[in-house]
Image 1 (cartoon, helix red, strand yellow):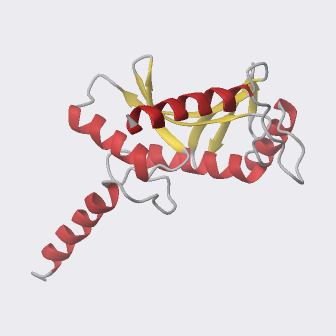
Image 2 (image 1 turned 90 degrees about the vertical axis):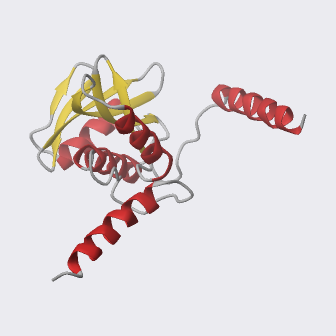
Image 3 (image 1 turned 45 degrees about the vertical axis):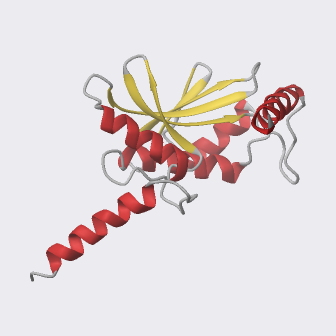
Length: 178
C-alpha cells in the first residue's frame, strides 16, 4: 500500500510539475532560439543554422541542436552508430550508464540509429548547463563501447563504477608481470 501511495505521489507530482511555468534562471535571460544561436556561435564560429536548429562541431564531433520553441524544448544529438548490431549486452550497459555515468546526457535509439542526446526545457536552460550538456553528449558518444561516461563525476549507486574498476584491476594484474 505504501508503494502504491509513493507511485501515486510521484505521478501527480510530475503532472503538476509539467503544468507549472518553467522557472527563469536568476541573473540570466530566458534561453531563446536567438540566444542559443549566439552561444553556439561562440563555441563554433563555423556553426550553421538549420531550420529550427543548428549544426555545430565540438572537439571534431558533429552535433545537431534542435529547438521547439512552441513546446519550449531543445535537444542536442550526436549519431553514434546503426542499431542493427547492438547486442543485449550493449543495451544493458547503456542503460546502466544512463543511470549513473552519463549524467545529463543519455543514450537513445530512434529511427535505427544509436544517439547520444541532451534534452532540456529551452527557456530555463542556463548557458553553463547548455555547455556542460553539449560536452557530456560528445563525451558519451566518444566513450561508447568503453567507459560510457559523460566525463565528469558519476552519480553513484549504479554499476558503472564497479565495471570501470574491473578494467583498472585487470590492467593492474597484467602490469604485475612486467
